[in-house]
Amino acid sequence: MEEIITSLQHWEAVRNNPDALTELFMIKLGFELDLSLFPEKKPLHAYAAVKDGELGFYVISEANDVDSPREIISANCYWCPCIHELGGEQEIPAAEAELRINSWRDTFQDWIHQVVTTPFGIYKTFHIPTTDLQPQNYVALFALKNDVLTPDIKAADLVLTNSAGIFYDTVTSEPPYRNPDNYYILNLI
Image (cartoon, rainbow, N blue to C red; front, side, top):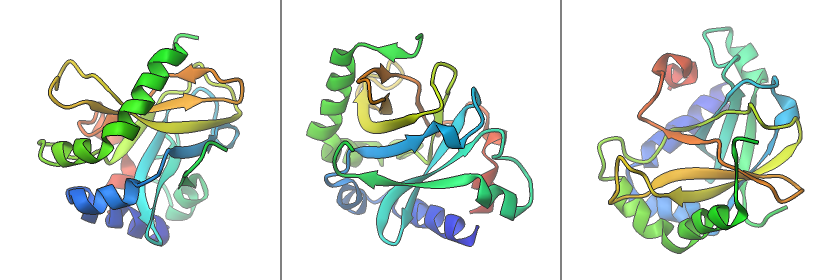
């Protein structure tokens, strides 16, 4: 558990530093996510972290992101390092997914410099509903989408895709939090 906490603290230390963030995100596309590791139909929390100098996400089911012994939290929290290449209701058209993904690739450096100056800064977590997802492998790709609340700055996004090439729009970056009580791990950093 200490490794998780330390990695989250490293993210917290750089999340308002655009130069450090740009370096961490350089040539990163997203991360792999194996939904078979988690309880079905329960939302996931993907905590941004820096482990051994590398960007990644600790992912835990909302069902396990609760006040419980640290060894239980640790056993249910999975490290998903960022990757460089691609190894229902929530489905979105491929063209929209590609637009969001390309927006990230083309503008992430400028976006980082903009978002760190906003009241909430860059995200700490992603909330990932899994209602329409199967217990299989997905790739969560970094993306940016237009946001009605902040039209001048695009919203951070993850677009999930599976081996069949179907894209899912399930993710919300946080803060702001819908329900901060659901993010127990944040109390530990």
